[in-house]
Length: 287
Image (tube, rainbow, N blue to C red; front, side, top):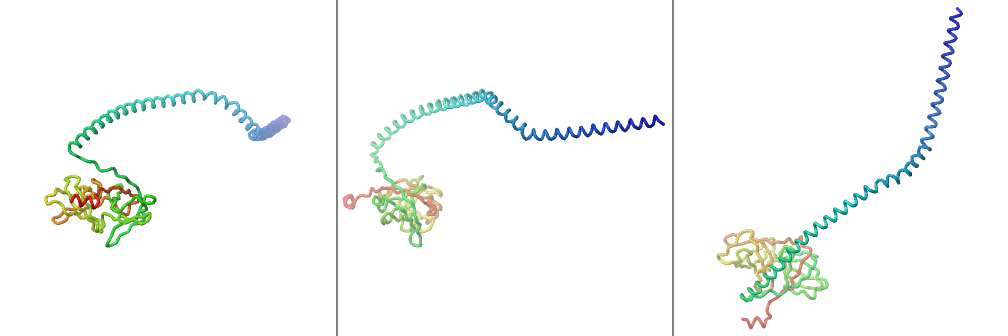
């Protein structure tokens, strides 16, 4: 019986020691967790900052050679590109000099041919621009109102008005710094024209709508659908060879054409200071 009592006492002692050891371990773990928390907020932050200040210059020093190599490569590439471009430009410059010499030769030859054919050049045409401020149109007239500004005193009725596509009309009336442009679609418009292909002549008349009529063409005129019509310069009121319309339809008794411009899309126009009509006295002498 005494042995059993001693064994029981030893087992209780061992359990008590284990229990105390576990309590101590839990206390130590709790203390470590508190220390880790404090270190994470303070010491770790300071250590990381210190390491950054120490390693940053080192990393910068290490990257300097790489940056230098990269910059050197970039500059070398730029120099090589400039060299190649310079070589290409020299080649183009040489070609331009050859073209310039060729143009001089053609110009001299052209001058001789003009003298041989008694050809005369059209006088140099002065131009000015104007802005469209209104579009007017009814059953009796199609016109635009343009603002001339300070050039109003230089503009005269009858001057041609063009846009990027070709002739759109002529100056009809001037009032102050404004002018009215009678469009080629106006029923009173009569423009001498010539075919760009067959060189057959005719008169292009307006109809107060989008289509134009080509009249007074030769009986055997070689005209086709799509042919471009140009101003002929006959009469001296308009410069020759200004695009004006394309033939739309050819029938037995009529030829219709479409203008190259859209009045609703015209914003800026150019006025041509061109008038080679003789004076009434000179015209009387010529007749």
